[in-house]
Length: 243
View 1 (cartoon, rainbow, N blue to C red):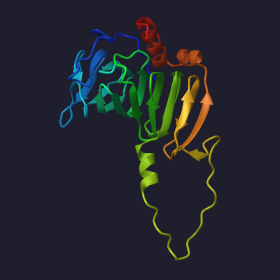
View 2: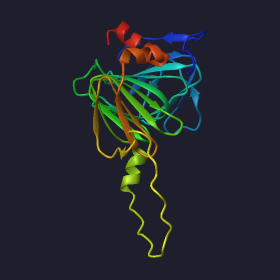
View 3: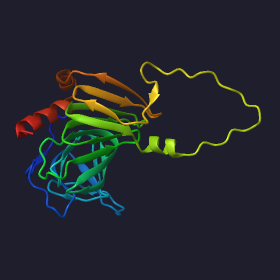
View 4: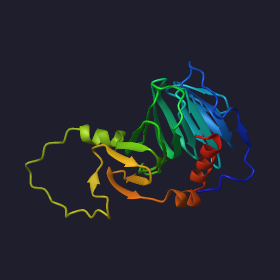
C-alpha cells in the first residue's frame, strides 16, 4: 500500500459540518484526486470538497488519494486510494452503501439524529450492518473482503453475490453416469460458507473469500494502526475530532 503522505494537496471544508437535509451526503475532505459519477450520468467528473451526493452516485479515489464523506445521519466514511463506493440509499433513517474495491473506514459513534442509526455497507462477498460503531472494510480485486472492528459490534452477513448463489435454484442432476471429482482441499479455517449473520466485536476481524467461506480471528488494534497507514490516519482523525 502506498504512503498517504507526500506532496498531496489537502482540502478540508467543515469536516464534521452539517449535511443539508435535501442531500444524502456531502464530500468533506479530499487529498489528491477523486471522481464522481452521478446517478444516471455517463461521464465521471472531478470531485471537490462540499459537493453534495445522492442515492445512486458513485465515487472513486485515485492513486495516492484520500476522501471523506459525511452522511445526513452524521455517519462518516473515509476512502483510501483506489477505492470505489456507491451510495445505494440514504435518508435520515439510515444509509446503504456498496464498495466494489478498496478500503473504507466507517465511524458512526456520533450521530446527528436519534432515528438515523442504521448503516449498511455491502461488498460482493459480505454485508456489514451496524448501529453506532467504528470498522474498516477492505474489498480486494478478487472480491474477497476483510472487515475489522475497532469499536462496537458489526453484524456481518453474505454479500450480494453470495445471496444470489443461495437463491439460484440448483439444476437437476443428470441420470447419465458422471465422473466424480475428489474432495477439494480447504485451507485452514475457511471451512464454512457465510450464509447466516455473525456478530463481530471490537478487536475481531472476519475474512470472507469469493466462494463465501470465511474465517474469524482476533487482532491487536494498536499493531494494526502501526502496520497500516490508512488505519493510523483514520484513528488520528477520529481522536482529533473527538469522534
